[in-house]
Amino acid sequence: MPRATGTFGIDSWDAQPYDEAEGAALSRVHITKTFDGDLLGTSTTDIITAMAQVEGSAAYAGFERFTGTVHGRKGTLVLHHTATSHAGESSLSWTILPDSGTGELLGIRGGGQIVNDDGAHSFHLDYELG
Image 1 (cartoon, rainbow, N blue to C red):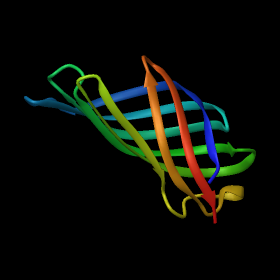
Image 2 (image 1 turned 30 degrees about the vertical axis):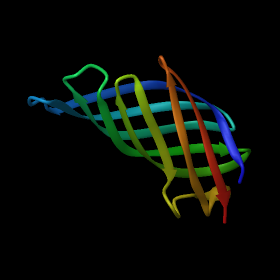
Image 3 (image 1 turned 60 degrees about the vertical axis):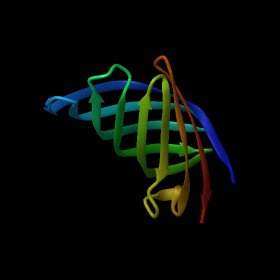
Image 4 (image 1 turned 135 degrees about the vertical axis):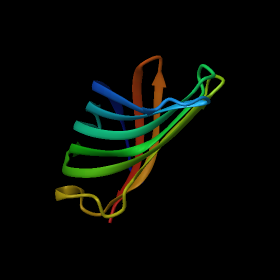
């Protein structure tokens, strides 16, 4: 299974809190990104975040539409995100929504992880084209 690696930068982050009750604050966040490496392109992401009142405890889930190339193959795909963090430990994973690939990415499937190292984001995506 091929592995795509690289980095991405966050171009915009628009958070809209909708529930700030005791325990955790919930927000809808719209994000735009630029990818570099084996994924070259841009994306738009919409996530729901939950930020606990305890510093460093949080979670999010959402979807991202990537437009560009994966190892030189041009098209789009949708990524499903799931992430949690607690006490300095985090888990940020993504899977490709089955049958979401277009163009030369038709039939792509797989998943991987994102690493957030003090705001510097890197990733790997293990995938196959069917």
